[in-house]
Each structure stands twice: as structure tokens, then as C-alpha cells.
Length: 73
Image 1 (cartoon, rainbow, N blue to C red):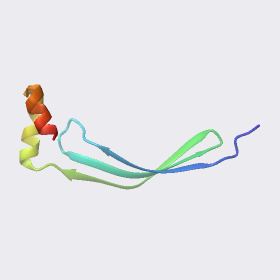
Image 2 (image 1 turned 120 degrees about the horizontal axis):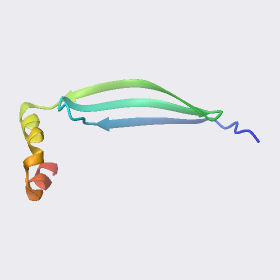
Image 3 (image 1 turned 60 degrees about the vertical axis):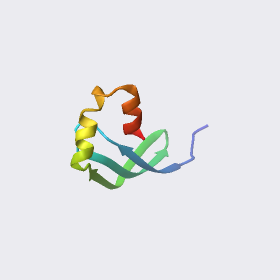
């Protein structure tokens, strides 16, 4: 029996990479039809980090566990 059901998803993705340029948001649509996926990016935008955040994040690997926890909060 063939799968004739079409599944549609609307998804918001958020990520921050190692470039420290900012936080990236993407609004995407996914369609699963006939065992294949298709997607389209509806909107995408990067929100730049302020200078202070860049400084804090770039040195986060040097922090103690307690200080890293504070930065995360």
C-alpha cells in the first residue's frame, strides 16, 4: 500500500554558530510526500550580538563551571 498522506510542517529554527556574528532565526516549511521531503525557507534573519556579548561568548571556554552557569543564565 502506498503512502498517499501528505505531511506539512512549519518550523522555526534558532542557532548560534562559532563565528559569533549573532543568533540566526529561520522560518521554514517542510512537506513530506511520496517518501520525499521538500522544504522552503520563508524568512531568515540574523540578530547580531552586542560587543559585550561577543566578548563574553568568545572567552566562555575559559570560565569555571560556576561562571559558565552564570553566563548561561
